[in-house]
Length: 266
Image (cartoon, rainbow, N blue to C red; front, side, top):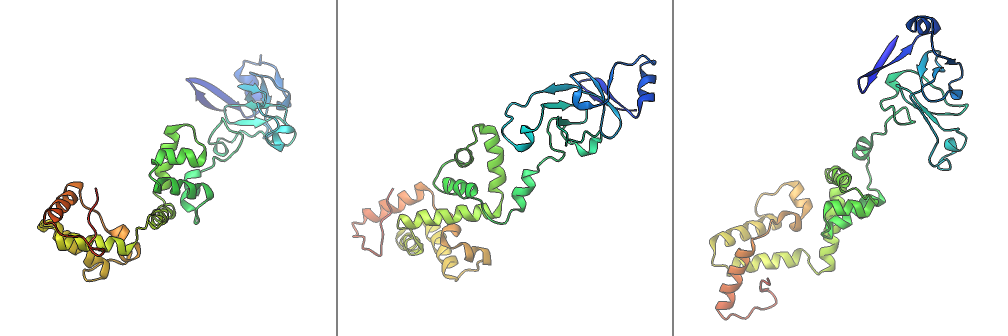
């Protein structure tokens, strides 16, 4: 005899009729030989020849959703699992085959593992990446791309996606596409860095700008990854206060800014 507790109540599975009769002092409840004909709370014989109770029996809400649903006369739940009521369903009593008693499937789909093992971005992942690159928050980006209405679920799923290298590469590609559409390229960034290095009176800005330029042109040591990412991925940016200081000092000199000396705009 085997059992599993649900909300403190033991639900038994008997090996055979003798064990079943003995447990009930030889005055057992009615036993239904064909579990498909049982009703809620009935004791039935499973397809692996054990005796188990039907804890819940119900109708299928959307019988037209799948082929299996169409040929089923509802569903039955035991302490082990949930089974479609039709001729092809095999009701077993093996707990190891049913990690979740509330689903029809014997196996739980491990979507997290599937996402991590995927090599190429999907259509939804690409839309998610474009949304993120466009400035939409990660949660809203996921809800928009996948049609998710639960923000908590969207948050969890978005975190998983943002940990995937293929997704982050797609986000970076989308950022570069947006930058290109705005006229922002490597030459533009280098010009602005050069302007900061040439015209700032703040030694920290001069040093930082010079270092960034050195990384881009290869004077300073850079890693292969940094070289692959390029200037947009390497440059960390300056604070608004630093940029504002440079602009004030340059304009204060009354100097005319030519095309190769781009003024910093707020």
